[in-house]
Image (cartoon, rainbow, N blue to C red; front, side, top):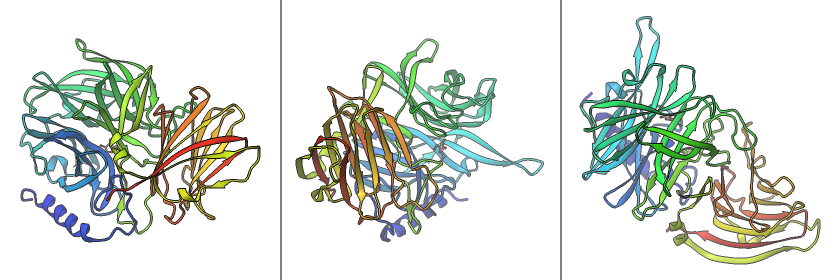
Length: 493
Ligand code: FRU
């Protein structure tokens, strides 16, 4: 195929599709694909004064298919500009897909590193998938794949590694040396992160197994991210096939972080205990970037593999979370929505909702009636507290956020959100109190519910596709309680 034919076809197709009205209204401040399917964030990076975010992308329909890299950029993490598709699976070595990867700036060039997937026919007619790592360089719009691709093949993996699962490179530079941390699997089926280095982006050598599962935290580790924060090193992974553990991890795909330190001599990550990054139903494959002013910003796919949902007739599927600022407090990561979101707050309401005795009727705060808002609720709680905040509610629908003070847990329950499939409908997480208070910040953007507890001690992200006319917010409490509510609409135009 002639150079870029496939990519040019996609770009033409995107341009045509951009004129079409979305069948299903898009969220206001969450990134969606211009057309078709989106999964993992890729190549989240700062380049020439702007933040670029690529993503796993199948433009031609709303199902996962041969992966492209969609492309968008932002100045403030809230308003996104769509750019032409950056990578198409148009080479022999990546004909089955340009899978996840990362990006960085070096000497004025934007470097993308991704997993190139090739399906090879075997002599017996069976097919074997080969995952290798490749590089494309560009100027922020157009990217050219290196002629030496693939630059890392599974032949560089140490003995005892599976050659089948080998993907999602995270690239960075330390001094003159480029490093890439790549997810892979040991032959026993457990995940590991392999580290490679290069001086010129073309010749790579194996350095170490940076970290490995050791029987914990699922099987294959997908989508590693590795960075320094507040003097510590953080490794983020998205393991497949985890088993539920208490309320910390759920079955299947999770996103896990480890705070630790990097032994630079041995090139080994020494990890502390791992925790979930998000306790909701829809959060996967997060990536981070360092902002110009030194903040570490994380974004994830707001969807999950085993429970994904796309409304029928929709011509787009998948979205990203609101980007979140990370910091460390004790042994835990704290995450809050980027502060830039506050620039879009309008129509402030600050009010106390008072339940003065047991068993009062639910309270519908009519003034809070919409689906794109940023609402913070604070309340003094004790072991008898039990309250529910229902969002996207009307006579027919609701999604409940339930606090149970006896168990110190918070639940999101979307049973009644309008689902017609037997998907996971609720998830529960443990929460703390601060001086006898709980603080919940709830961000809603039409279909998304992102809850941040106690200024980011926990996050819980879930997706609903409740019809937009269900816009009431209803408070209910078993006990006397005062909700101190501060609420803003979020306006993008
Ligand atoms: C994670 C993942 C990655 C892979 C990509 C394919 O969600 O499975 O490991 O690169 O999605 O789209």
